[in-house]
Amino acid sequence: MNSLTLNRVIDTAFKYVGFLCTLSALGILAIFIINIASEGLSRIDWQFITSLPSRKAEKAGILTAWTGTAWILGLTATISIPLGISAGIYLEEYGKKNRLASIIGVNIANLAGVPSIIYGLLGLEIFGRLFNLGGSLLAGSFTLALLILPIIIVATREALKAVPKTLREASFGLGATKWQTTWHQVLPAGAGGILTGIILALSRVVGETAPLIVIGALAYVPFVPSSPMDEFTVMPMQIFNWISRPQHEFLVNGAAAIIILLLITFIMNGIAIYLRNKWQKKINW
Amino acid sequence: MKRKTTERIIEGGLAFSGAFTIVVTLGIIWVLFSESVNFFKEVSIVDFLTDTEWTPLFTQKHYGILPLLTGTLLTTLIAIGTAMPVGLIIAIYLSEYAPKNFRSRVKPVMEVLAAIPTVVYGFFALTVVTPFLQSFIPGVETFNALSAGLVMGIMIVPMISSLSEDALFAVPKSLREASYGMGATRFQTSFKVIVPAASSGILVSMILAIGRAIGETMVVAVAAGQQPLFTFDPRQGIETITAYIVQVSLGDVQHGSLEYNTIFAAGITLFIFTFILNHISYWLKKRFHEKYE
Figure 1 (tube, each protein chain N blue to C red):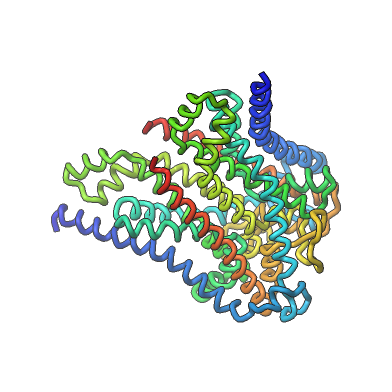
Figure 2: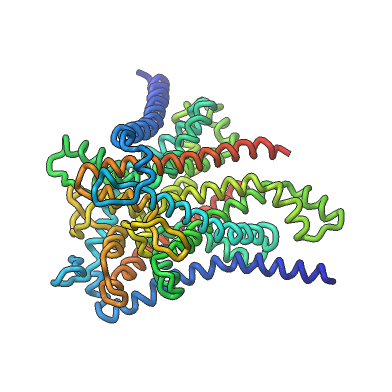
């Protein structure tokens, strides 16, 4: 075999290796979903969704878990979205060249890489003890809001960056102020991208477990939370609690809860991907 | 005049939101530092760094971070050892070989893989991968570093492949064309031209992946065990820094006690590692962007 054919063979071989690697990543995802579905699908019924947790596996349900997740999602969104979008606007529209903005930029890149469990330690001391919120919904939401803040800021910046300069110049030319331009022109034009980023960030909130364990969220909560000061559990915590037990019945409960958790994350990600594609087509100005 | 004041107030508010992120960082550093100081008043830093036993929750107490560090290092090594080659091959395949419509179909699926909550990956490690490993490797315990590391690797693949692919994609077309013009195959072009040109971007993806693996909590908390052993045997149960923090948080530990302070000492160790990695990757990314702009 001369070197020319050898090179061709290597080239073709790599093509198949690459294809196989990609397929196996997708294959693992498939095994994964099939395994969980076969374990847990038969366990899901109306009783499972509307029951309180219980020591008996067959009686236990996820009512407190999904209501807790809904509370956390709502509160975290309320706290983090205004803050994140404002910071993104400042960095992209106002402080492009100044020193403060560049320090904030480095800082955000760093914050995005801080492990989530460290945010848990922060929340435990600041919100749990200093603000005396304990293991309440509010303490959990503040903690997770800080965790997703960098994601929302970066998404806002990217979305605003994609808005063409001409739009701003036209607005300024008509005598609009900086804020009028930002509020009436730039933000609406970038809204699709910002929304995509927010949904992705919130889908992360739904799956986050570690920081909530650290601030002291409980695995066993026998009531549905009714105010932000209540103690709570969330879907992933309930799953963690169930799959840490040796009995197989609880593992089945865990698998069933995982199916519902995955459904929520997939729907949120699906909406985000759909919005992004739609928005990307629209912004070919 | 009035409008000008409004504008000022709004800009001030926006700047405050931006500056708030600095407060978060300072808050993290302050919390970790102040609680760790209490810890190091009781335990000497030499013991902390050299003792090979970590038993703060037992009667015979030892405070050596080394077992937690080796546990973290072991799972991270296994994860990166799996994810780096696979992720890079997928990135090269998608960027240089795959037909366009295949690529546009695979990418969303990869995003789905990246969006799965980590506790779910823990379930996967415990119920699928561990029994599978036990079927052909003797001596694999129910909780072990190998299974947790491998699953963490699978979890990180989408991150490496998507970041590396962005880097490969950013390499100017002219470089590819020049290489093809000289008669090189796609394989030669990929590995001798494109990958070296994109090396800093690929390095960034690897550093970020290491940071992610070091800080990963739920997979190891579910599947790797809670035994802080000073070992590099991947078949055994170990304990990572993150899993230890979870273990203490789940238990009933009095605030202000030495046990309570240990999670902050463990936390600051973790934070220092990720802080360094984050800054290296930020610096590399900046250099890399300047090169092509």
